[in-house]
Image (cartoon, rainbow over all chains, first blue to last red; front, top):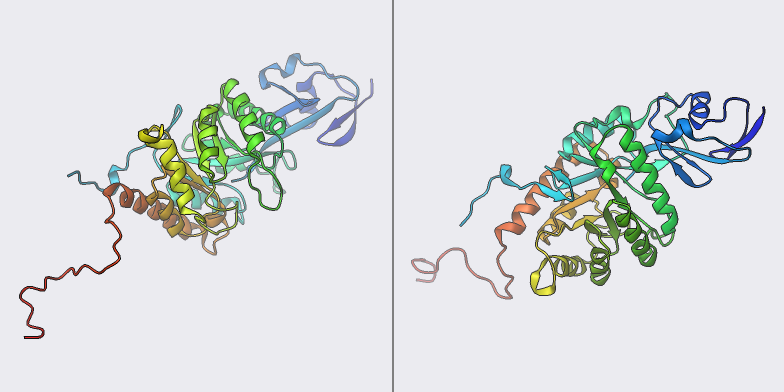
Length: 68
Length: 281
């Protein structure tokens, strides 16, 4: 079923399994060190496979960049 | 009297993390990752700061900064830069920890806390800083806390449970060095001197505003345990050479402080004896 998700501030149409780890695989981020929030709450990396997304969820995917 | 060599600077303990260098170096603003990598090596640091961002998961060549940081060599200190509320800083700290846990880096236990007050000065919001510090400590973080150079604020941050207070030498990225040495000295006195309720082992790291090696030396001569800097190296014309100079300056300042400087006097004091001089005979 087609779902609309907000990923890093952009709306995407998503038509895959609603587990969070499936979304990361869809985005080709499974092998990147990153952290994920859903609706401003951290989903720990070891719980992604058990976390089910819902229509309209707002997802932030972050990683490390240069900083002081 | 104790004599020391450059090899005898003791390690710096920050919570559970031991630093072999007293410089902590940022990873932002370098022209490219390769320069950053060489500059970090030249600085001698073994802890580096990073930011947590969503904008780019990899650079335009498909590379991540983690491809250029040896995570076995460097402890990564994630910051909450860019956060203007305690709640955002707490979110970012937890996100950073989750990433570092995935790469099994010791830095997952700590955070460089910044809760900023405004975008022009990038000075900290003291109320938000204290609020975030307390909650992150409660959540198990070792908090390295960016602060202004206000001595009372420094003690409040310590009392909130921070592992280390990091007063700013001057505004972030300004290159103005140690703008108020007396304030930094007061921070250090209140935090470290037992007669002022301090603990000599409590770490104080001067963070922000460093532009030159002499700025690093001044901070260390004031009695800081270390210096955190980024822009002064990254935007130097020759970052790798500047990183080398910063390393040497840090060592010089450490030894300068611990060897005990002479008191300042109003009048001159001749180094050569007057006795035996033929002048005026």
